[in-house]
Length: 105
Length: 91
Image (spheres, rainbow over the protein chains, first blue to last red):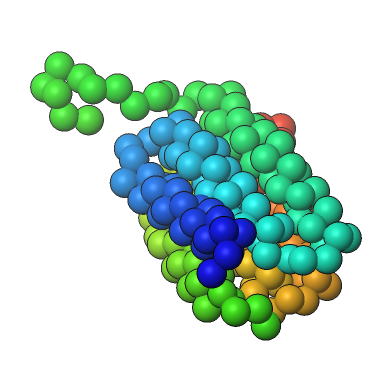
């Protein structure tokens, strides 16, 4: 395989890893703000890496530009959406999760 | 179909599995915001899977579908959060 193909496979596998971290965080973290953190950070990074792999794999000029545009769009909008949801949660008075005196949720 | 298409398809399948894992939070999420965040993650994973399938089968037309899906996903999240604030959690 050529170095470009190694780069494509490596980017895709790294993207899958960070997507798995995001799914784990969505399921396991204790409240809505920490879940928004997992969704905005890990999932955005996984999305950018995986769509970057797709952009490298698509050979024609126009589709590569489209894939890079999709990548930039997701890089901007995904944290914005998570921020809007977390702000709505805070406006409705949902308290952040803290460790109390007994040390258990 | 390019020669490393199997790896790209495997990663797309992994993202579909992660979307199904996030569906757990849509069912059991204590607040509506947990559900909206999980739906947002599921939409993001769907966009990634569409883009990877587009690269694996060398069909650039699918990228337009992924772009429109990403736009609708963002619009859904913003609309739900704004609706929830202004109408006090109707859902």
